[in-house]
Length: 266
Image (cartoon, rainbow, N blue to C red; front, side):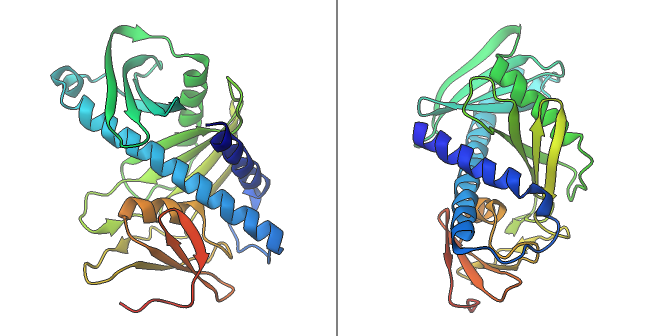
């Protein structure tokens, strides 16, 4: 856990340092900078996927409860990782906690589902995450779908982080589609949004061809793949090859990024 927090803190420090450069192709990086950026993308992409899986498992379990399905108070969720679990807390508008679901990181199994008798005040950590989520959702980003999922991660290892990173993830109702376009990263500090970037210039949707072994995308905003490519490759359960402006082709597979040998054939 400590190792993950250190890696997460390092990754977020790198992302925050380069936050203002995200809307145009980056200049060439030194080998050391490129290695650090690739490691950060891997760490963040895997972390977002881990929490997104927990949210999906918690939602599926909660929807089996008739009261939850009828509960119009639910306005969203926040997550917190601890002791091999991700706890997903469903919140109301205030926000206050309504339901808590503990999900195993190892196998996504539900360890505990708690329905609170009354809306419960959030812990300081939960309150910080909820505030960051609201800031990100209201940050004026250009959506590509009507509905978005969110993943909120702490940007430091303190008990009550001041800086957070929020990922806005477009949803899809179509089969065999990967909604890469419209993915955003928003970094907040206190009551302010301090950085925001998109990972594409359009509402790009990748098609999963059952005859193809992998996905391919041309990425024009960076000279290396990002955490968005890592996340969506994991989400799609399929390798993704990423072509960058400097002519290189990268392979993103199972949460790792390596330099490929060229565009794969279908």
